[in-house]
Amino acid sequence: MATTNLQKYLDFKPYKPKKGEDYMSVEQVNHFKNILISWKKLLMTEAEKTMDHMKQDSSKLSDPNDAATQEEEFRLELRTRDRERKLISKIDQALKRIEEGSYGYCEDTGEPIGIKRLEARPIATLSIEAQERHEKMEKTQVD
View (cartoon, rainbow, N blue to C red):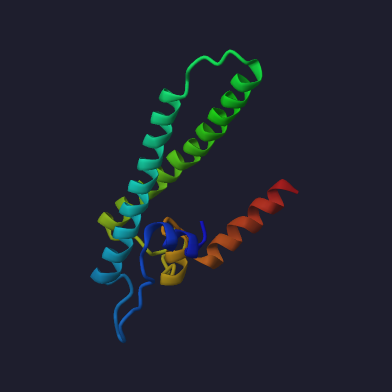
């Protein structure tokens, strides 16, 4: 989800650091904590809607084509929810890093990840440079 999409869904304003403000100040941490909690709530609500929808629409359809279409729709919804379940796990890990005081810092280098990157991907654990290195290594291992 790009920044604008995440902002649109969660309705938050980008963080503007104050002059001389330390990286991952209390205000910054609270900003990202609120984003993560809101994002998780949104995903949980969507999962609930899916379960309700599937319970209500799981009636046996007499037409085999209709039944096959419904089954395919359910399969796609479940696949989406599985991806979102994994995302919720990453959000929980980010919230844990906030509690531990390591949120916002690259887990490879210990350097700041950066406000803009975290707003684009609040669950990021690597700086852009470290992420690029990981992707290059993965690519060379596949080749």
